[in-house]
Figure 1 (cartoon, rainbow over the protein chains, first blue to last red):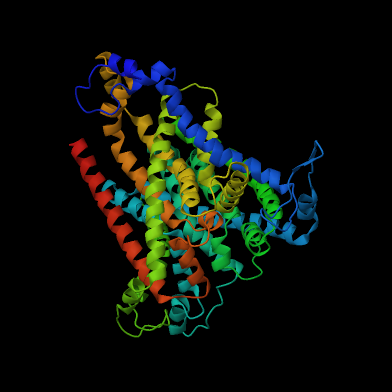
Figure 2 (tube, one colour):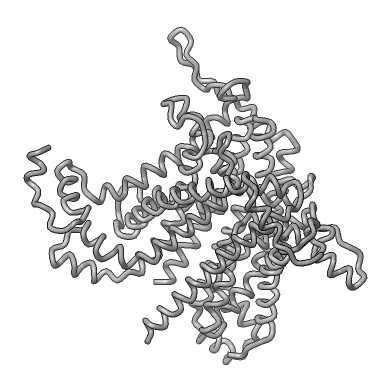
Length: 318
Length: 268
């Protein structure tokens, strides 16, 4: 160690990285490898391996003890035996509860995404077309809820829609009977739209703000009505933004737990909630793992679509 | 271009939808009555109650600590990851790394939480670490998904960066590490700050993942809030929400004004 240190020049100024590179090179590690390796190792251990573990445990069965699942590998007199149970997956396809939860999660996420798109698109377009001095303020108003607590926003919404909440009090002033909104699927739709709206607006805005307005003028000069211009020029050009925004809403909405459990009723079936109950209430870890794997299958295609859309946005930006 | 009436009206309604529930929550946090929706007079008693609640305060302190450490880990890992993805165009496993870092952005929380818990349990069985679950496991879990967000923020700043400054420094004989610390780091500093803040906020906000990987005695603030809110409205949660919204609003407004001013200065 002393020979290594004596070979290094004395540090002229206090720079922690001074000489660090040379030291690493002496050991045979380039800085480049290190930069890649640190996040790669972390993500492998804490993101990729866990998914493999979930798959493994989805093939076990519930058992009393710690951990509460049967071991996959057992050694018996020198023999190693691998036991895989498919019962959890069989159950997913045969138990009507799981099938219903899947279908209703997909339906709720899909409808909510469409509503978010319909509300978010005009907002994003308005911000993109707003005068410069307004644009930053409007963008800030979109980003602000994104930074405040998700849980507290869902809670705020529940106070708003409650039986004696603000909406019903306003309706009461006009002599309208109070509406039952809480603990219905309607409340879940509103909750998803409310909390995920910024995720829809931001990618749409990034896309629409780059839109070449001369194309719109050309279309108008050629005699198109505004809605024809919108359908034939604006909408097709903003498709990557639409896909990115929709996927950013759809994918997390599928597995949503907080919204259905705070706003939905007991009959609001969503797969995230089923997984939660399977794990926390029934402590059936293998069953919860199988539910997670099946949920993963549903979100993989949207995730790939999202990546493609993001690449397209990046390419266009260059 | 013709300015129609449709867009302004749609935008106004949209913003009203985003802000009315939050605003009513803020107003009712100053309500005297325990009935959160019936106004009976101005009062700050729920704030007093909030600051006298040891469970809330303890959970808040725990959450702040976890958020600080996980945001810091995520900042380091996310920055390295962004540098690797933007600067090193080709290396083995680049697609896997790009996928593994962007997937947590959209991965449903219940899957991430369950997967990490099962990993921690399996690891404890195999190598004896981490023993039990608590602050450490929550911090690791948060650092992992926050890394994804930091990477996105830093990546977009890095890819806009003018390479000529770095090339000039290299031509003058600076080593890559020195170029990074002397040139690149100061330029991307704003992105690092917003990445860290984003990670900090996300960690403070997480309920689902923390619920899976926490242990006895390590309830974070969202876990305490959730258990209170689940039983119905509670006015001290309104007070807490108002404080959080106030802090966030000041921060975001400040950051926007700062970036608007510096943007104007750059253009001038």
